[in-house]
Length: 441
Image (cartoon, rainbow, N blue to C red; front, side):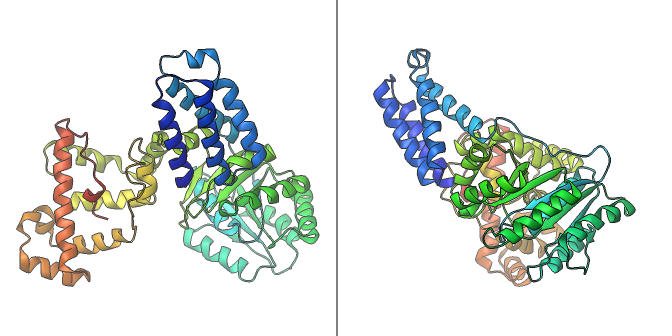
């Protein structure tokens, strides 16, 4: 996400960091470039105007111009203003003292409400909660069926009724949740292709009847300012408590994320980037600002790793790495844990300094499947001792995995490069060792 905006801001800030001395003129020139980058990212023009004005006021101060590292000072000012723009700090979901906590999802049709209901349910279950989803979209064809399928796949209960009355369904779901021991209710309400009076009145009646503890507006990040405009109208009628940005892995330019908080004065609570049930991130303004400026996001990376990585296996791997005994079996185990963390490209972007190196490197997550198939077609001895894999073994492995001999050769060659890279890391010579080509995907 934010690839184009990040690239443009990095280039602009690199120029100003290279200036031996800052003047009002070169600051003004840089701010023009930043303004252009933000507008091209579809950030609201009023938000851009205020942002640039705030940066300029702080950047032309005497303490900045006379600073030992004025360029770095400017970067910090831009970073701090981005944090301010997106909400200063993370805001948690409000949980009820007496369960169930009721979370109402609202938004236009196609914004990803139903998919997000499942993602939020899985997220809350990992936090020790017992969620139930409520199929309150009685208009969209197959909406109820879609939610039931998602619930079945995640083993999360879904409340449905044939009454054809969304308000009644939401009200009755409260007793159902108590009977089944569920402490969080997630209401998947109906949307439309555009805002209409009938839809808004129904949402207002649901709000009045069930009194949700949270009302989240689900905004399609790919629609840019259209999402912001819709958010303003929903805010007037529902006074929602938070925003969720979906589809941030697509062609989203980032404008919605940078505008919606300033325009609605409501915190962004989650972002969703991907179709998988675990493709949900808690929104932290400071971390997102760092990612937008190409500084990585180590904290989020560590949090993902803590959720996905088996500590006992990690300790065993550490011992093997120290002895330089890394095998294809070890690599396969690590591959499974990396997959749990999300798309590889997103993981690497969180590492400071690596994001810009891989910006134009194509990553195909389907390649994971190919690599797994090749390793699964090897014997245990071949995984432990790849050096014994001769020509006939390579042909057998290729045939068994449904791949080409060239694919097997490429994996073995890249695996050997990884082993060399690990040796460099062990000897403190990692600088320059990273190469996208060393990754077997």
